[in-house]
Length: 354
Image 1 (cartoon, one colour):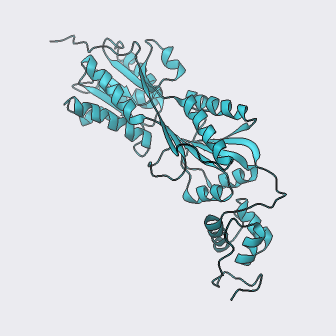
Image 2 (image 1 turned 60 degrees about the vertical axis):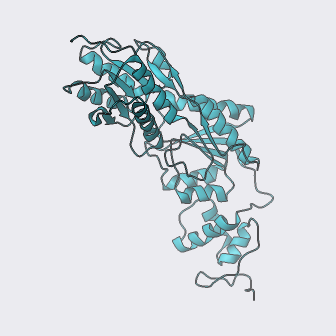
Image 3 (image 1 turned 120 degrees about the vertical axis):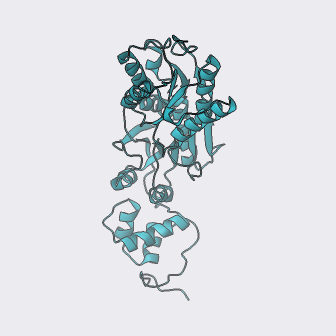
């Protein structure tokens, strides 16, 4: 038997609603709450009882959500979510997204998470209020609930340079970090270095682990032992390159080369080498990762791994727009190639003492 309209309550076992995406009215009737309450949940507001919110969200996850015919279309915006807006990394990605957005007459909005890699509670509420055409989360990861809320409202989500495991369900764009780490270390090995130090990024981030794993693979293939003292963990900040290099240079047997897993930390290596009176590359070879514009300006110009950040931005934006049209992109997960850029900061090791 079916229940009379409006008779469903939280403590009853409601009949399954009609198949297909549901309107606010259908959700409200099934859960037994007002249209205003469902509207609050749909728009990301939190002044709703937890049990009621879960019932509404569960229905949206299972059936989808359909706005009324007269509802406005999504705003002509692409939203980029950065963990922090600082340096050339974000600029390069923004330029790539902006290029595609301009071609499709879309604006670009930036959200900044103040250094966090997962948005806080109020972020989804703001996004749902803006109703952008798509969201691109850069070097960030959303909670399952946040992802479900966007998906349930038909807002496409694309991950760019994802921080977590590769098993995520959202479409993504990344660089070949493992190959980059492999190429960087192979370059130093071919020059004759064996005491190669690595300054990585945070251990919990996918890019950090992949670059370090690429380094280890190159060392293993060359039958070159890895000294645990030469593996240092940073946070992709210039100060990490500075402080770790100071410590590395104080070792009884210091490295002859340092692979900094981003260009910023490589700049810190330069500063520590200058403090110690060492010349790059005569006394110490340095290689970075990213190929940001300053890498070709500093003295000596930095050998680095080119990460195609602007192309990553254009690819992610194109995927988001494709999804917004109700189409599937050719690939769910895209990995763009990295490339070794050889400049003047690497050379064969110099041995001043026999």
